[in-house]
Every structure is written in structure tokens, then in C-alpha cells.
Image (tube, rainbow, N blue to C red; front, side):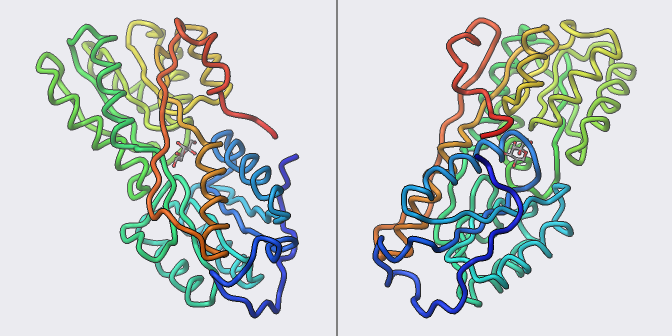
Length: 314
Ligand code: T6T
């Protein structure tokens, strides 16, 4: 089962990275700090725990209450003080998390990045993530088709400075520019708050009667955008392509409030990150950058895509 809260890491270990055997890993702890509590990171945590268990490793997960650098940074500091064998983290800001993670590495805690990355990811032994630019481009093509290549489209960026939000927005913008009949009216930020996404959408519809489509860059942006459309009684008239596939988003897809979801593979990210941590700790081959897939879910293929739906618990 998913465990939250802390389990104490081993202390007093004198072995350093690359000097351990797989047998030495048993009983040691991997720290995990996701961006926030959501089904994407829950799915990732479940996979991390399963993979870690295979090596006798424990997992200590500390989950920020908000997707905010100021909330995540003290969690990093307290986790590092427990000296886990390695720390897997999704930094909520590519710049602000660099100093605390540099301190972690300096204190002898190797850092692996999952999902999001840093402006300078060099300090991490690996970075495992979706190809978010490519995902944003896939969203642009899906939305262009849904709106028949016409009208105005809007992006809801969930958090400026979070690498995933920035990359999805960039991938979308570059690709939507190739659809000449579509006018891109820009990105608005919802700060990972579904209620804010809903009000952005309601205001955008009021100001732009010819709005035809919305790309919502993550789970909370998409959930809120769909709610906003329903409040404005515009569900189905304005098309939504969302990122992520939590159960609420799947319900919205089934109801026709959302037309397509770009689903990530959080379990693959988690499993591969543990494999890389083990390789790093035992002197094996480490891959500095690993890209994981996305799939596009629609009403038509939903039945065959059940495995792509994120977990609410392990
Ligand atoms: O979209 C995911 C994740 O990739 C992103 O970095 C933050 O938001 C999610 O966790 C979804 O809520």
C-alpha cells in the first residue's frame, strides 16, 4: 500500500554512492518528494514503492500540501537531515529548488529528478520525465482537429516556472502556429487551482464568443476548465484537450465536457527512477536523461486505455 509520512532513514552509513552491492541496499531508505498530493504522483509513488521493495529498500514519502517552492523547500531540508540513501524529487520550480537540492548533494544525498526538472539538472544523477514539449505539441494537433482548424484557442498554464508547465505550453505554442486558421490568444496561469482555471475559462468565453478550444496543461487545470465550461453552459461547444488522466478527468471525458486527455505514464517514471537510483548507488550504468511516453485518450479509445488511468491509491 502507499505509505505517506516518514519512516526514519538509516543514519550513520559510511558507504558512498557506487560502493554498495545490491545486498547492501536492504533496509536503506529512498526519499520521495512529489509536487503535491494528486493521482499522478500517487501512481508514481505506488510504482516507486513496488520497485524499491524488490531491493529491500524502504520509501519515505513527504508530500507538499501545495505545488509551491516555498512549501517544498523545508520538506527537502528536513528529508536531507535524515540522510536517505537517495532522494527522488519533482521540483516545483526549476530555479528555486536548485539551492536546497545542491545542498542535499553536498551533504551526500544523491538526487534523482522525476517529472519536473531544474534549470540546470546537472546536479542530479538522473532525470526521468515525460517529453512534455512533445506532449504539448500532441495536444495542439488534437485540439486543431477538434475545432476543425478554426477559431480562437487558449492555454491554461498551471504554474509558471515549473518545467512541465513551461514545456507543455511551449510545445503547444510552437505546434499551434502551424495551424494557420487558428488564432492563439495566449496563456493564463491558474496556479494549480481548479477554481481559478474555471473562472479563467468563464471570463475567456464571455470576452471571446468565438473561442473554440482550450489546452489545459495538467490535471487541476483540465478539471477546472471543464467545470468552467459547464458553468458557462458551453460544454461541447468549446473543446478541451487536457493533460493527465485522473478519475475526475475521465468522468469529464465520458460526459463530453472534455474531448481528449494526454495521459502520462507516472508508473514508468517511478519504476525507472528507482532502477537509476539503484544503478547509481551500486556503481552500475546510469542514464542521465530518460523520456517516458504519453498516450492520447478520447471517448472512442477509452475502453482500451483503462491501464492509462491514474491511481487514487495503491
Ligand atoms: O501534470 C502532473 C505533473 O506532470 C506536473 O508536473 C504537475 O501536475 C501534475 O502532477 C498533475 O496534477
